[in-house]
Amino acid sequence: MTRGDGELNLSKGAGGVGAGQEEFESHRGPDDSVDSVVGHGLYPAEAELESIDLSEVDPALADPEAVAEIVAPQRDVQAEVGESLLELREVTMQFGGLTALDAVSFDIKRGEILGLIGPNGAGKTTCFNTMTGVYRPTSGQVRFDGAVLGKLKRNKITRLGIARTFQNIRLFNQMSALENVVVGTDARHRTSVPGALIRAGRHRREEIDAIERGMALLEFVGIGQRATEKARNLPYGDQRRLEIARALATEPKLLCLDEPAAGFNPNEKSALMDLIRKIRDDGYTVLLIEHDMRLVMGVTDRIVVLEFGRKIAEGLPADIRDNQAVIAAYLGVPDDATA
Ligand SMILES: Nc1ncnc2c1ncn2[C@@H]1O[C@H](COP(=O)(O)OP(=O)(O)O)[C@@H](O)[C@H]1O
Ligand SMILES: [Mg+2]
Image 1 (cartoon, rainbow, N blue to C red):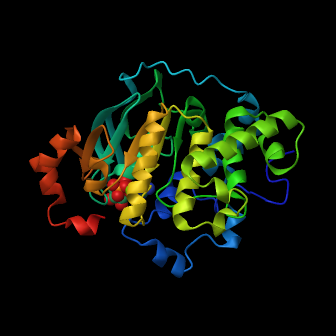
Image 2: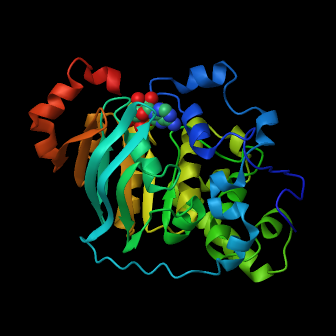
């Protein structure tokens, strides 16, 4: 079966817009409340579902040949715990005249939760995008577990073991929660993703495994009881958790979360931070983007602070809290407004 075959009709791309541009256009500031997004009909409508790109779930899924190569790749992590898993070196990203990232360097160490924080527009999501192959840096280098990402495409980078969630949720809304996760499991284990995903497949045993693993992941993130509900019908907070489960299904070496608590109330936020800690304790390395300083203080092992595309501080949460440059960057932004 080829991509696009089947009732889901998952066709490629949104109107020929490049991946990077699409990412940018879908970017809404975290200040946009979820309610307003839903209320104004901006939440993905059924019509839009037709144009969801499988490669948004996992770039490898868009390429049947690449998918065929993904036969349970070893997720052997080269870096020891505490060693650098990802290294950004002097990464600059320019959009026309705008320098969104200006010679940014930092490491993500294996086994840690690294917080990437900064005011709105600081370059956090752009930084993410240079690490996941959405953008190719204007200059500088990104190394991941010994490999230079360089010109690697997104599917290759995913296969190396970087998974992400999006600042604005991207799910297959018509599919059940479980199916959304099995998509991720497929990326990890399957040889024939679209066919296996959509219909009862040839590999019954693998399918059962994928379903079991999917269920386990849903349980892990706390939404096991919602497995058969369509993603679109899940409460917003559960959708965020589902995105995390789907990313984990690829068994990433590095899990990147882009403002996963956006739109959450304080209780939901602290529950989500518990989950992120649990993920780290399970052996994953996590990059957490968040603009709410207080939130990251409690959960991160280290913090990198961006402002206007520059790294202005890096260190332990306690040091960042007292750092004058960081305080100045956040000055004028009341704590409540950043929540
Ligand atoms: N594709 C793009 N084209 C042009 N400008 C962009 C693009 N992506 C991001 N930017 C700009 O780069 C800056 C950093 O944006 P972003 O990384 O989204 O910030 P953050 O995630 O920290 O809020 C902003 O000024 C934003 O407008
Ligand atoms: Mg952002």
